Image 1 (tube, rainbow, N blue to C red):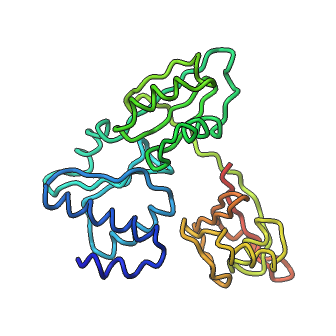
Image 2 (cartoon, helix red, strand yellow):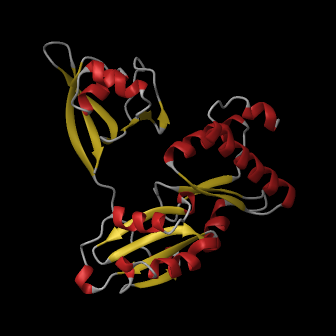
Image 3 (cartoon, rainbow, N blue to C red):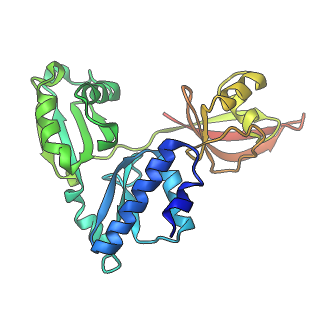
Length: 267
């Protein structure tokens, strides 16, 4: 594995930094024979990492964010003497649950934005924070183990959380909400990306092309600027400012020859 040659394949500086860090983690795991891991990766970063790991045929790793189907996950590498079950049994040493319990008068008042905004106000690096699971009476905030205690103290200093009880707990104590998806039907001339974006964003094909060229569209969590790309069933399309969608299935064809397609919108 030639690190220099691998890095040359990535033009984006942020992507190169990510790849460099991942390669360093792999080397550390192999030479020290120890479990090692990244900070939290977003969906786009995970897609890039998966392509890299596939290309270099690395297998001893898992993506995990504290619960199954977490959106933000750490990439954890482990020596051959271990397996993924062993790693998950040790997960509390990697990821912690910061549990905020609001006073009764504040129940049902705070959104995901309120919690994330408070964390960002404290100057905490975004990559140190995983998913934020909002409840009626508070939130479970998944964070890297190394900042859990300090974040708890800092959050208590914010006015919005002054009357709240904030504890560092095991991730095994969280209740994971169901993923909500709403089924919608669109009529498109084809499964070309510009057609799909035009329909999902409720705009013209020209405007859809502009959105795509401005790098506001991701396909399976990777930026895509090829308007003619043909999508497949199961593809995830993210349109910044409009939401995330999953191409579900072809229901039928209209009399005019257009495709009637069902799509899941994440809500």
